[in-house]
Image (cartoon, rainbow, N blue to C red; front, side, top):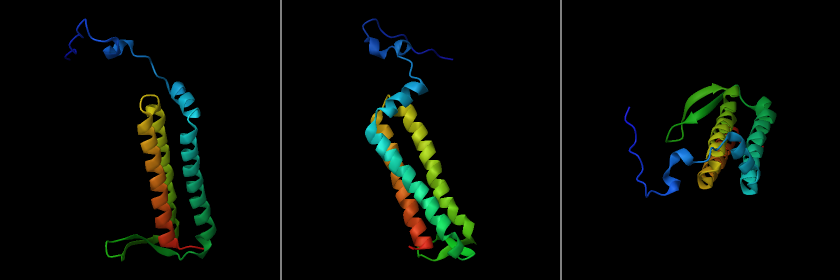
Amino acid sequence: MNQPPPLPPEAPESLNLASAPESTFADAINALIGDHGLQVLLTLILIANVAMFAYLFFRFENLPNLMPLHFDTSGAPDRIEAKNGIFALPIIGVTVFFLNTGLGILLHNRERAATLMLTVGTLFVQILMWVAVINIVGIV
């Protein structure tokens, strides 16, 4: 393999990757614990997802056995499945939550803005999942 060219002697020390401080997962978690704004966002996301599971659980008995779960561009259903398929929506939401939170933890020490973007994106996904649930199941 090709080795990267050596740095010129006048290069600043910050460019030397060998001297970069090691960032561990524990350091990232500690930094995340101190970020109260991010904690509030993550808590809101978790509450939204748990509430969606609870809402679907309490509405489950009153749902028809076959439900339209996907619609085409004209609004006509193009996928009809058993009513337990509606739980795919909060499962997608929780999957996005864990993936983006894991990435955010890894990025937090180096780029807090990226962590916030991932978290706000996750909140947006939760909102979209709620809109889909309400459109499919209806409001109480």
